[in-house]
Structure formats: C-alpha cells, structure tokens
Length: 257
Image (cartoon, rainbow, N blue to C red; front, side, top):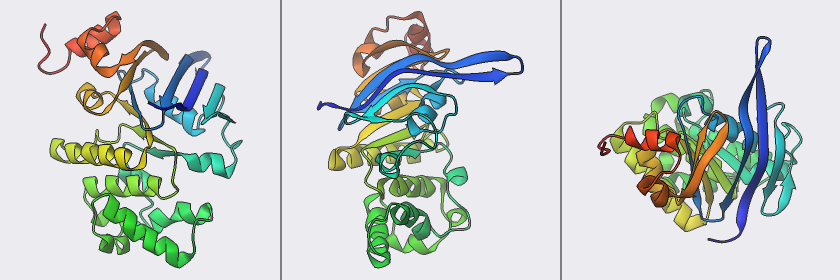
C-alpha cells in the first residue's frame, strides 16, 4: 500500500446524558492508505458511527488531530475549507434519509459539483450520466426521484453522488445493512470495482463481519469508544487476540465453537 491518505490521532468525543458524561470515542487512532479499505467493526453503541462523524467533521465537541495526504484538516464542524470537505465524502446507511426526495436523481448527483464549482451546467449533466453508468444505472434515471427507485438503486445513487466531487476518501457507514443479501453482494462488488479503478481509500464501518472480511484489507475492532484490536483482516479473523474480538467472531454464523 502507498503512504497514508488519512491519519487520525487521539480522537475523543464525549456526549452528555443528563448530568452524566459518556465517552463515545476515547483516544482512537487509525490510518488509511490510498487504495486501501480499512474496516471498523463493533456492536451497536461501540463508537463506530461516532468515529465516522468525527472524520466527516460532523461531531460537535470532538478533539484530536486529522491529516489528509499529510495536510492538517480541522476536526471541528464548520472549520474546514470547502476543498477539504470535498476530499472526504460519506455514504450513509439509509439512502432514503440521505437523498433529498424533492430533487431529481440528476440534481442530487450534480449538487455537490455545483457547490464546488466543478464544470459548467452542461458538463455536469454529462458527468451525471457517466457517473450513473459507472455505478451500474441507466443514465435515464437522472430524471426520476428517489421514491421511484429501489433500495439498491438509491444506494448506487448515493455512491455516485459521493464520487461526483472526486474525493480521496469514502466513509462508508453501514452502506449495505439495509439491503437484501443479493443486492448487498452487488453493492460490495461495485465498491471493489470502483476502488480498483479510481484508487480510492475506504473507511468501511459495519457490524457485519462477513462483509468486512470480504471487502477490507485491514480491520480495527472497537468497543466502548476504544480500539481494542487491529491487524490485517485475515489475521484478525483467523486468530483474534482480544476477548471482545473473540466473542464477535465466535458469534458469526457458521463459526466453530
């Protein structure tokens, strides 16, 4: 793998629950190289989605240091330059909630390009058609709205929207968990093909260990806001060292007990 595209060090995030304070992230550090897919696994409430929000610059009160291709990037929401925002894009779990129901598919994909000043209106229309084809959709779908598409099609649109601004890193937060197994496999294969073609860095956040094992080169295991085990994916799955990791893998369907 090449040099680190993303470097996160000592990320911390605390939430209030009434009078109490809850550490969603407690000193998390990780890196992702160009062309690499790094997985983050853990149960619900482990800190996975909080980690994605910190890296995306969406978490109020987060601290730590973040570098993208060696350049310091603010963690604080609203502090990033537009160009820094462009370089990190997120694909969410629920495409229904993340796609504006009022806009056409073409407008949804083109919106980021317009914000970042990419191309003329005609050039953006051409790029929308090309992106739809790249994610396996008929360019004619650009005239439709999200409710007219299936769940798998909507997630492909979400991926196309993220790719439209030519990011360096995709944050994939449970991007297949709302899909059936057949469509899930199709989306995973699409992500693999896009990564190979574009040299993208992926941070893939999931509770689905089978998916992470299929897609990721390297994996971090997180619980209670702390990374408790890290390593090459196959090494971690073959010989987990931490009791929490051992429990996760033992609970996988078909695992030998």
